[in-house]
Image (tube, rainbow, N blue to C red):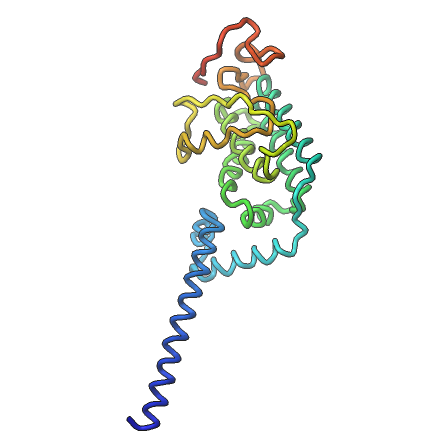
Length: 252
């Protein structure tokens, strides 16, 4: 083989190797983005002309969040927010719509405390997607219900689902809620067949039973959306006042 042919073969081999390397790196980066952003990756791709543009946008999000002063909560702040959430859950028994609105405000407060700019909702969602993509869709669903709460259109059960979804991001933002000093395992938010919504299986619902509050509002003790109290309230000791056990009730 002549020298020019050898040179051409070497150059061709270098090009092939280089192309394979670039493709491998691009594939690795794509998988990293898919793993990090989850459904947010699919959302970005669906809203873009191509995967490359969508991925470029996700990389911009990562760079922006790296430049923000995102910080963990101190233990006292974490405990304080957990106590506030517990109080809101108690409020849900009598005034579900007000409690859901309050939980939204509390989640926004935690975002701000962590260092997320909250002035622009769309940008806020983009920022949150970098570290909290796994719970962001649930936050969107809760916000949608909250947005329609003023006219009184959501049912009490819709409001309870919104509360659960807000709690998912709230727990994510709080960080390590199980490590709270003095935290106790709450009475779980009872979920029966009527409480299950599409896209969330029983395992995922079980994961929502967090230890950031003294108790969760059981479905058998949910107030009505008209602001009137629902079923019998629990006594201070955490048991029914009349000694009877509670059973889940279907919300009409």
